[in-house]
Length: 290
Ligand SMILES: NC(=O)c1ccc[n+]([C@@H]2O[C@H](COP(=O)([O-])OP(=O)(O)OC[C@H]3O[C@@H](n4cnc5c(N)ncnc54)[C@H](OP(=O)(O)O)[C@@H]3O)[C@@H](O)[C@H]2O)c1
Image 1: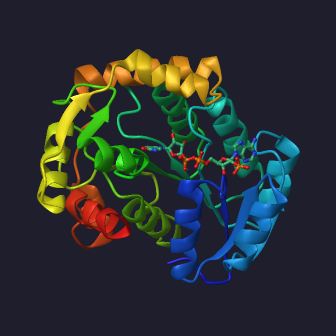
Image 2: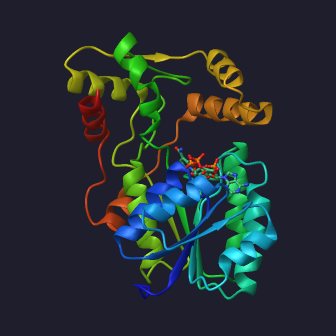
């Protein structure tokens, strides 16, 4: 276990994943320095117990040098689908080596090898890190079960679970709280050097499976439907998403339609020392919220 006086750097700390990981690191008694780009996010994180905050652009080498001063280990989370994710990882790895950082924990993705642009950029980031000589831990999380939260109001309204891929494609849906706990342990504990951990949830579920579980929890029938991909992409466009990211979403959802994204939950179970949270548990919590 790292010493409680060691300082851990978390990048993209103000995002969904960043906040969840920071919260678990603090719960384990870690000293955390958060890298964020907004003052209000810095204030919120400080109020939540974070010891230090650096405000700046994650893609700026000078900001990274400052953020890494006096740091023991890093949990690097990249903003999602960023076109320069691999370049950032290379820069971060080089600076970490130069500054004598003990270990870099890279938040990657399950199956970085598949032919989807942001997976391939994460694969490149992994390759760079593995070849660098810096001690590493690579985390490969599957799709979050929290994606259902975004469509929960429509599920209740339309009695349909509707995402833009086949109702039969399966995903090892995983709860963000479990991923955050696993990430915190991987950062804090000493026995995760040079490991690559695939982090799937405990079941590989299709939209049909999800609809069946939601029907069971709500006590009424919810059907599974494939939302037309163009309709989904037009919605993202109307919400202001840049065209380059829409293109990545398009490729990702075509892959999901054909193959899903399913792996294995054994490593997550071992890291946590308990069963991962089930999709049914998550749906019950959502149903209580209404
Ligand atoms: N969602 C999934 O199912 C899933 C599965 C596997 C892996 N992942 C990976 O998880 C990672 C995190 O995703 P997320 O959904 O948690 O992301 P998120 O909520 O969108 O958070 C991204 C954070 O990055 C910050 N950021 C963006 N550009 C920045 C910059 N130039 N300098 C400093 N900070 C910057 C944002 O700051 P602001 O708050 O200021 O905007 C935001 O807080 C991604 O790499 C994703 O690929 C996600």
